[in-house]
Image (tube, rainbow, N blue to C red):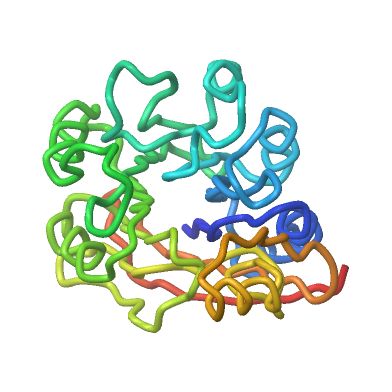
Length: 262
Protein backbone atom coordinates (compact mmCIF):
# COMPACT_ATOMS: atom_id res chain seq x y z
CA UNK A 1 0.00 0.00 0.00
CA UNK A 2 0.94 3.65 -0.37
CA UNK A 3 0.27 6.75 1.70
CA UNK A 4 0.99 10.39 0.92
CA UNK A 5 2.30 13.05 3.28
CA UNK A 6 2.33 16.73 2.22
CA UNK A 7 4.48 19.50 3.65
CA UNK A 8 3.40 22.70 5.38
CA UNK A 9 0.46 24.32 3.56
CA UNK A 10 1.12 28.06 3.30
CA UNK A 11 -1.91 30.30 2.97
CA UNK A 12 -4.74 30.28 0.47
CA UNK A 13 -2.40 29.54 -2.43
CA UNK A 14 -1.19 26.37 -0.75
CA UNK A 15 -4.75 25.30 0.07
CA UNK A 16 -5.92 25.88 -3.51
CA UNK A 17 -2.91 24.07 -4.97
CA UNK A 18 -3.52 21.08 -2.73
CA UNK A 19 -7.16 20.98 -3.80
CA UNK A 20 -6.15 21.14 -7.47
CA UNK A 21 -3.33 18.60 -7.42
CA UNK A 22 -4.21 16.04 -4.76
CA UNK A 23 -6.73 14.03 -6.84
CA UNK A 24 -4.06 13.37 -9.47
CA UNK A 25 -1.43 12.63 -6.81
CA UNK A 26 -3.72 10.04 -5.25
CA UNK A 27 -4.05 8.35 -8.64
CA UNK A 28 -0.34 8.65 -9.50
CA UNK A 29 0.77 6.95 -6.28
CA UNK A 30 -2.33 4.80 -5.81
CA UNK A 31 -2.71 6.24 -2.32
CA UNK A 32 -5.96 6.19 -0.36
CA UNK A 33 -4.61 7.83 2.81
CA UNK A 34 -3.26 11.39 2.84
CA UNK A 35 -1.84 13.40 5.74
CA UNK A 36 -1.06 17.10 5.40
CA UNK A 37 0.65 19.53 7.75
CA UNK A 38 -1.71 22.52 7.97
CA UNK A 39 -0.08 24.74 10.59
CA UNK A 40 0.55 27.62 8.14
CA UNK A 41 -2.70 27.33 6.19
CA UNK A 42 -4.36 30.49 7.61
CA UNK A 43 -2.57 33.42 5.94
CA UNK A 44 0.76 31.73 6.62
CA UNK A 45 0.44 31.46 10.41
CA UNK A 46 -1.71 28.90 12.20
CA UNK A 47 -5.01 27.37 11.16
CA UNK A 48 -8.70 28.16 11.55
CA UNK A 49 -11.79 25.97 11.55
CA UNK A 50 -12.57 27.18 8.03
CA UNK A 51 -9.12 26.27 6.73
CA UNK A 52 -9.33 22.91 8.48
CA UNK A 53 -12.64 22.05 6.85
CA UNK A 54 -11.26 23.03 3.46
CA UNK A 55 -8.15 20.85 3.86
CA UNK A 56 -10.15 17.89 5.17
CA UNK A 57 -12.20 17.87 1.98
CA UNK A 58 -9.03 16.57 0.29
CA UNK A 59 -6.89 15.05 3.08
CA UNK A 60 -7.65 12.38 5.66
CA UNK A 61 -5.72 13.91 8.58
CA UNK A 62 -4.14 17.29 9.42
CA UNK A 63 -1.03 17.59 11.57
CA UNK A 64 0.17 20.81 13.21
CA UNK A 65 3.36 22.33 14.63
CA UNK A 66 4.73 25.35 16.44
CA UNK A 67 2.13 27.71 14.93
CA UNK A 68 -0.79 25.64 16.25
CA UNK A 69 -2.20 28.44 18.42
CA UNK A 70 -1.38 31.47 16.21
CA UNK A 71 -5.00 32.07 15.21
CA UNK A 72 -7.22 33.48 17.95
CA UNK A 73 -9.95 31.07 19.00
CA UNK A 74 -8.42 27.92 17.56
CA UNK A 75 -7.85 26.61 21.07
CA UNK A 76 -11.63 26.18 21.15
CA UNK A 77 -12.13 25.22 17.50
CA UNK A 78 -9.66 22.34 17.62
CA UNK A 79 -12.10 20.45 19.83
CA UNK A 80 -14.49 20.27 16.86
CA UNK A 81 -12.17 18.07 14.80
CA UNK A 82 -11.23 14.48 15.42
CA UNK A 83 -8.90 14.43 12.41
CA UNK A 84 -6.53 17.19 13.56
CA UNK A 85 -3.38 16.27 15.48
CA UNK A 86 -1.28 18.88 17.32
CA UNK A 87 2.20 18.10 18.72
CA UNK A 88 1.91 15.33 21.29
CA UNK A 89 4.76 16.69 23.41
CA UNK A 90 2.85 19.86 24.30
CA UNK A 91 1.46 20.06 27.81
CA UNK A 92 -1.46 17.73 28.48
CA UNK A 93 -3.30 20.83 29.71
CA UNK A 94 -3.46 22.16 26.15
CA UNK A 95 -6.55 21.31 24.09
CA UNK A 96 -6.48 18.81 21.27
CA UNK A 97 -4.63 15.54 21.00
CA UNK A 98 -1.19 14.51 19.82
CA UNK A 99 -1.99 11.25 18.07
CA UNK A 100 -4.90 9.32 16.69
CA UNK A 101 -5.81 6.02 15.05
CA UNK A 102 -7.66 6.34 11.77
CA UNK A 103 -9.33 3.96 9.35
CA UNK A 104 -7.52 3.61 6.06
CA UNK A 105 -10.06 3.53 3.16
CA UNK A 106 -7.75 0.99 1.52
CA UNK A 107 -8.01 -1.27 4.56
CA UNK A 108 -6.72 -1.44 8.10
CA UNK A 109 -5.80 1.35 10.50
CA UNK A 110 -3.09 4.00 10.58
CA UNK A 111 -1.79 5.75 13.68
CA UNK A 112 -0.67 9.34 13.11
CA UNK A 113 1.59 11.02 15.68
CA UNK A 114 2.69 14.67 15.67
CA UNK A 115 5.84 15.73 17.51
CA UNK A 116 7.69 19.03 17.83
CA UNK A 117 11.46 19.25 18.09
CA UNK A 118 13.40 21.16 20.71
CA UNK A 119 16.57 22.26 18.89
CA UNK A 120 16.23 25.92 17.74
CA UNK A 121 12.47 25.76 18.38
CA UNK A 122 10.07 27.58 20.68
CA UNK A 123 10.51 26.53 24.29
CA UNK A 124 7.06 24.99 24.66
CA UNK A 125 7.50 21.27 24.09
CA UNK A 126 8.86 18.50 26.28
CA UNK A 127 11.28 15.80 25.15
CA UNK A 128 9.83 14.29 21.92
CA UNK A 129 11.85 11.07 22.23
CA UNK A 130 10.41 10.25 25.64
CA UNK A 131 6.91 11.24 24.56
CA UNK A 132 6.80 9.12 21.42
CA UNK A 133 8.13 6.13 23.33
CA UNK A 134 5.20 6.40 25.75
CA UNK A 135 2.70 6.79 22.89
CA UNK A 136 3.96 3.71 21.09
CA UNK A 137 3.65 1.68 24.27
CA UNK A 138 0.00 2.73 24.52
CA UNK A 139 -1.03 1.79 20.97
CA UNK A 140 -2.97 -1.45 20.40
CA UNK A 141 -0.75 -4.23 19.07
CA UNK A 142 -3.09 -4.54 16.09
CA UNK A 143 -2.03 -1.12 14.76
CA UNK A 144 1.00 -1.80 12.58
CA UNK A 145 1.12 1.27 10.32
CA UNK A 146 2.38 4.34 12.18
CA UNK A 147 3.25 7.72 10.66
CA UNK A 148 5.19 10.35 12.62
CA UNK A 149 5.26 14.02 11.60
CA UNK A 150 8.34 15.46 13.30
CA UNK A 151 8.06 19.25 13.17
CA UNK A 152 11.60 20.41 13.83
CA UNK A 153 14.26 22.85 12.68
CA UNK A 154 17.41 20.73 12.90
CA UNK A 155 17.98 17.92 10.40
CA UNK A 156 20.20 16.23 13.00
CA UNK A 157 17.28 15.98 15.44
CA UNK A 158 14.99 14.68 12.70
CA UNK A 159 17.41 12.03 11.50
CA UNK A 160 18.12 11.00 15.09
CA UNK A 161 14.38 10.49 15.58
CA UNK A 162 14.30 8.35 12.46
CA UNK A 163 17.00 6.05 13.81
CA UNK A 164 15.40 6.03 17.26
CA UNK A 165 12.12 4.82 15.77
CA UNK A 166 13.58 2.53 13.12
CA UNK A 167 11.64 -0.71 13.13
CA UNK A 168 9.01 0.76 15.46
CA UNK A 169 7.08 2.96 13.02
CA UNK A 170 6.40 3.05 9.29
CA UNK A 171 7.72 6.54 8.57
CA UNK A 172 9.27 9.57 10.25
CA UNK A 173 8.68 12.58 7.99
CA UNK A 174 9.95 16.04 8.84
CA UNK A 175 8.21 19.37 8.48
CA UNK A 176 8.80 23.03 9.47
CA UNK A 177 11.66 24.26 7.26
CA UNK A 178 9.53 24.38 4.06
CA UNK A 179 12.55 23.11 2.07
CA UNK A 180 12.52 19.54 0.77
CA UNK A 181 15.70 17.69 1.69
CA UNK A 182 17.57 15.11 -0.37
CA UNK A 183 17.95 12.38 2.26
CA UNK A 184 14.93 10.14 1.66
CA UNK A 185 15.67 6.52 2.54
CA UNK A 186 14.33 3.40 4.20
CA UNK A 187 16.36 2.53 7.28
CA UNK A 188 17.45 -1.08 7.98
CA UNK A 189 14.51 -1.74 10.31
CA UNK A 190 11.94 -0.74 7.70
CA UNK A 191 11.23 2.88 8.66
CA UNK A 192 11.07 5.46 5.86
CA UNK A 193 12.66 8.82 6.71
CA UNK A 194 12.90 12.24 5.10
CA UNK A 195 14.24 15.20 7.09
CA UNK A 196 11.79 17.63 5.49
CA UNK A 197 9.09 17.02 2.91
CA UNK A 198 8.92 20.71 1.89
CA UNK A 199 5.84 22.92 1.58
CA UNK A 200 2.68 23.65 -0.36
CA UNK A 201 3.31 27.28 -1.25
CA UNK A 202 4.48 29.76 -3.87
CA UNK A 203 7.36 28.57 -6.02
CA UNK A 204 8.79 32.10 -6.37
CA UNK A 205 8.96 33.00 -2.69
CA UNK A 206 11.03 32.64 0.45
CA UNK A 207 9.27 29.84 2.34
CA UNK A 208 5.96 31.05 0.90
CA UNK A 209 6.54 34.75 1.66
CA UNK A 210 7.06 37.72 -0.67
CA UNK A 211 10.71 37.82 -1.78
CA UNK A 212 11.20 41.62 -1.68
CA UNK A 213 9.74 41.89 1.81
CA UNK A 214 11.99 39.12 3.11
CA UNK A 215 15.03 40.74 1.50
CA UNK A 216 14.17 44.08 3.13
CA UNK A 217 13.98 42.41 6.52
CA UNK A 218 17.33 40.69 6.08
CA UNK A 219 19.04 43.81 4.70
CA UNK A 220 17.71 46.33 7.22
CA UNK A 221 17.07 44.26 10.32
CA UNK A 222 13.84 46.20 10.79
CA UNK A 223 10.40 44.70 11.47
CA UNK A 224 8.75 44.07 8.11
CA UNK A 225 5.37 42.59 7.23
CA UNK A 226 5.95 39.41 5.20
CA UNK A 227 2.94 38.83 2.92
CA UNK A 228 2.13 35.32 1.77
CA UNK A 229 2.32 34.86 -2.00
CA UNK A 230 -1.09 33.44 -2.93
CA UNK A 231 -1.02 33.48 -6.74
CA UNK A 232 1.20 32.45 -9.63
CA UNK A 233 3.09 29.19 -9.71
CA UNK A 234 2.33 27.24 -6.52
CA UNK A 235 4.35 24.19 -5.55
CA UNK A 236 3.08 21.11 -3.72
CA UNK A 237 5.86 19.12 -2.02
CA UNK A 238 5.44 15.78 -0.36
CA UNK A 239 6.42 12.15 -0.17
CA UNK A 240 4.76 8.85 -0.98
CA UNK A 241 5.59 5.91 1.29
CA UNK A 242 5.14 2.31 0.19
CA UNK A 243 4.55 -0.10 3.07
CA UNK A 244 3.30 -3.54 4.05
CA UNK A 245 0.08 -3.13 6.08
CA UNK A 246 0.58 -6.52 7.73
CA UNK A 247 3.91 -5.56 9.29
CA UNK A 248 3.94 -1.77 9.04
CA UNK A 249 7.39 -1.89 7.45
CA UNK A 250 8.15 0.56 4.65
CA UNK A 251 9.76 -0.66 1.45
CA UNK A 252 10.10 2.64 -0.38
CA UNK A 253 9.78 6.41 -0.17
CA UNK A 254 9.39 8.76 -3.13
CA UNK A 255 9.69 12.52 -2.58
CA UNK A 256 7.83 14.63 -5.14
CA UNK A 257 7.20 18.23 -6.11
CA UNK A 258 4.41 19.37 -8.42
CA UNK A 259 3.29 22.82 -9.52
CA UNK A 260 0.09 24.47 -10.62
CA UNK A 261 -0.51 28.05 -11.76
CA UNK A 262 -3.26 29.85 -9.83
